Length: 384
Image (cartoon, rainbow, N blue to C red; front, top):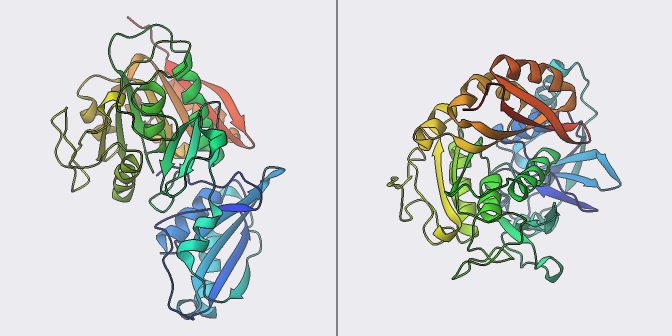
């Protein structure tokens, strides 16, 4: 599962999970409010999602990026006081592994509203790096961002909307890698996305490394030049996630970007992907490259790659999961390739670097935002 996201705009928040629908007409709601400590934010969002609480937002302002407020809306009829107290106990338990105390939870009661509209009001276009734009699927591209490559995301599909520090670090590092990878490989660039979540990193790779997508996220009938100091080549992206919801979300977001979805014609001979385990390639946007998505982890990703490890590995998951997967990275990342690993706290870097070294990888902290960091890994073994 990829780390979930939060808004980077004043007075706005970001929704998570399956997306709110309208509650029973006229029914009141409880609004949970909680200061989201950086170490606990991912665990809190995961726990709420696991409990079926999908109307969630994170609010903060650029002036105080570390002051992140978690908001959740619960139907009052389903959450009387005993259940709310049990929820508080369950959330407090998440802080124990970190040696922290969960900040106080406050409850505010409010009337019914049209959730399908109010939830969307939390979302705005979000520029990332020099060339990317994360754009809610229902919004038009603002004129001031018309020169950016828009990645359309439906925030209700899965974790991964681009504005959490870990995802921003990955997107920015991917952009730098795309601009500075040097000479043309003479073949499609191969990108592996391990723990794809909403598919945002996979889609960003297609847009940065491929052709055929116009600014604003609309497919172009013919390849268009993308300004870059190095030649632009086609891109093949192979993505996996252990969560079947993430697999479906990646396909749904691919469709939002005009890239087709499961059942699209498959140049690689993939199956229709209806069960979430078979991969299929993008059809309409084949000029930009291809996307294959499957349910699973490193072993399934290696199978998708067909014995040809990737030039670039994207892995935006939590540090303990990265550590557990490190021995398998050699099956998905070529000896001369680069891995971009995020989802980790800067305080976790020393231990993770040691674990990666034991698996044969040189790791360097190359970027950080607040308490979050991004590691770049390369093979410690001589490249033939």
